[in-house]
Image (cartoon, rainbow over all chains, first blue to last red; front, side, top):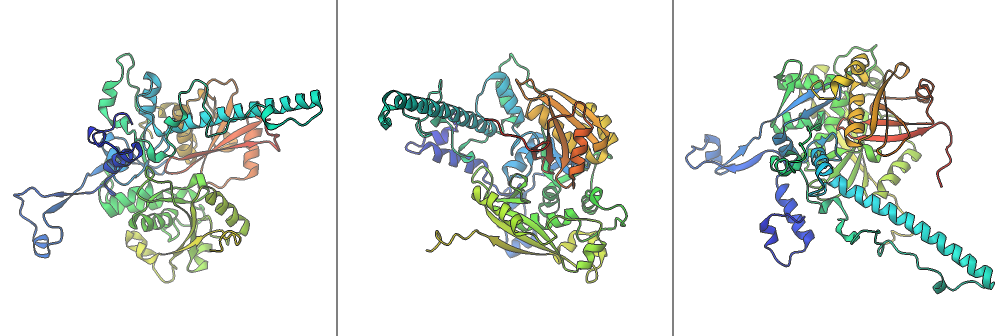
Length: 411
Length: 119
């Protein structure tokens, strides 16, 4: 973080970690893409604002981002760097398709071609892993050497060697990789890394040595359909283009398009009319529930769960909660007639619960089972599925799972 | 997807197996640009109803096989067996690339039977 802004550098006595946090707080100050800015002084206030005094002299600044629906990957792609910046920095929407989280492929590629200027999160992890691997090999060698020496002493003298007689084995804390000044340059967690996002910053591309031509950016920001619908319908800051017509998809058509996106999963023998257990609908209910409560919601594929919840966002903390979405049919008959075979509908086994909980407590995440009740077709007509209005018929219940260890949890 | 620079190489397979086009495209681009494998090639394996990707990890000699699939798909062991049977020469192991809709990919290494771990 040698090039943090001058404002932060000027504050003496602040630790590097604290400055890093300030820097992150400044970049990721907004929880949603919408901004609340002051009105220009000469604008007359709208009647309602004036009378009710709701927002004072403020207005909402809508960034009006643009994305393209991609049917094959069942996602929405953001390819322009301005919108990528906005959606990632204000609310951590989407994921770079060639990166771990924010799109940094171009920065990594440029670093690779011209020598690093500032390490991206992926590069920090790669270096940490390399160091760990080196530590383990050297420790294994030292252990083997110590054992051989002890054997030799025993063979020569017939006595057990004293600990001082054999070479010391380096500990993880004192380990210094050969040819490395200090291992301490590597930050411990993602949170300390200054976010790169240089990929979209044209000034960085200009800085690159003239010797290399900046490569073509092969990466885009990929939004899940849940994220895209939340941004387009709930927040109203995303315009989604149909690539076949190059025109934007109207809100009512968007709902229909996204519901149809998972038709390939449906059994072909059942009519493709909309169903309350449509996979998009069920996952959207879960996404919308947590996102509206202020959590940053990401995919949980790496931890055998459906969703991960971050407080504020992945650059600040590791995910705190792991969510398994469990659909519950209000009317079990609906399940039989439905063309979808949703996961986690069957009663789960103890071994399943134990496995998932162990995986997640290992990484210090609390497991939450999120039960989503699918409204019965005999109670609510399928007509209601024509618009997002039908979301009000779903209910969400949560059960938190924690492993109880009697000997350790007496207090 | 159709406008991406790599699509022209993938189009024949994507059009032949539209159901697997998304996961195939995602895995291919991850292998090529993110993992930076070398000598990356595509094989059409009709029995699996999708394209399979082969290549070498950077600075290694061994050719590896990657089979893309989507998180939402249901797969069976007989389907996995058919991958081994329909590749020539039949590989010792394959990597199953499971893709999710936010573009995350997890790779699982699948071997024939029990494999003794390296010492």
